[in-house]
Image (cartoon, rainbow over all chains, first blue to last red; front, side, top):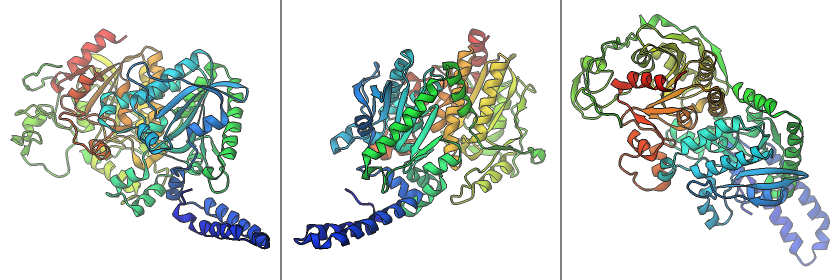
Length: 325
Length: 283
């Protein structure tokens, strides 16, 4: 597993545990190993309890971090993938399909980053094209028609910036999803499982309930993009500054009222125990869907509307017209 | 595509801007497109279209309001709504300083003016973005004012005309800005359900979170000629694909050809075109 630089001290202890454990008379070191394991666990918990925003971004991008496909495998039964937008193609960067979670039938929509190099390239590293957003909308309409709730897994650095994506209307595709998701007459829950990069994330994120995994990020722009524009260059230092300035962590988004819940990750991050993380997501999703399922569609749509309608930070100030005269 | 019209003075609009700049400008200016030196007054009285090459120069918010609406008919709403700094955002400068700077330069509270007025005698709700105010970026104020304007148009059964001119979402409000995309789009969803007419006018430049929300949701989408319009900025795309971008990429003409806008309209014809559309589709 890839180790992030701030995890080096933990790695050191793990190396010691390993060398003691693999020595011929490892039984003699049993106590020492137990102690080292405890130290490691404490250190790991401590490290992850105080991640900087930029470190959080790097955990959210960890190559071993569970992705939509992993959660679908761990949480869903009888997943029936539905392909294509019926207009242009089938974007592998967004996966959609019917599935069962617990006793519920749902439609799952998720960004797909891909695991192997060839998968990653095919999925454009989780950056969807317009046909991906249109596929998502089309399948969501299907869910609405059959009164199936929608479960979205958000994990994208952003919508794909390319010639084809512009030509095929990236902006229009996202805009239409925002509008249509806001009035969909079926429950929508969304979980940011890794990266919540801007409009590309929100394009499948207009939910009745939105949660973020503890070490995911969600913001109007990536720290690097922000650093490049506002600090004139993206480097380790400015990325750090931008990540902090953007208030992109789960905790901050919750405090700002932009999401509804934060889902705890196992000590050391979701990649250290995907099963436990998946269980947490499953429980949250089912709880939300049970509550939302009691609402009439009109109530559901009205509350979803009011929730997004109410977000904003404004004040009043009398315009000083003096300079115009 | 709109026919090219001979530049002419627009008789029913007072184009001399009321917003006097603190620094006096020179009598002459250089057209950024053809490079010709032109008489500044001639450009201004020509709705900021170059008399030599027909290039559409950028128009600030207050001046655009004057250009768009019948003289003296605009009644501004929410003009006292101003931005906060919910995240205490500091980059090379604090956001509060950027706000204050933009406010004192423009005499406006933020980068969107909303209100009601008449266009060629048709009553409308109008919203006009101002690129001079922090790049026309959409933060909470722009989102809130626009949502209010959309709702006003719905309540009063009026067509909605929005002139977009923006670099996208305002980074300094991060998640708050992002959610304005959902908010404005949701408000337009209701407006759409109620049968309202939304004419979206895209001008140079319109990008990012603005394009990917309300700007692309027009019932009819118009664009000024040769405006640069897109989702991702050309520089970002170039870095991603590591190739040169095709000629005319992300221009109004490119969007028309790709099927994403209805008409390209010369600035001189904009009011006529809007009036005509309202007669066809307005209530």
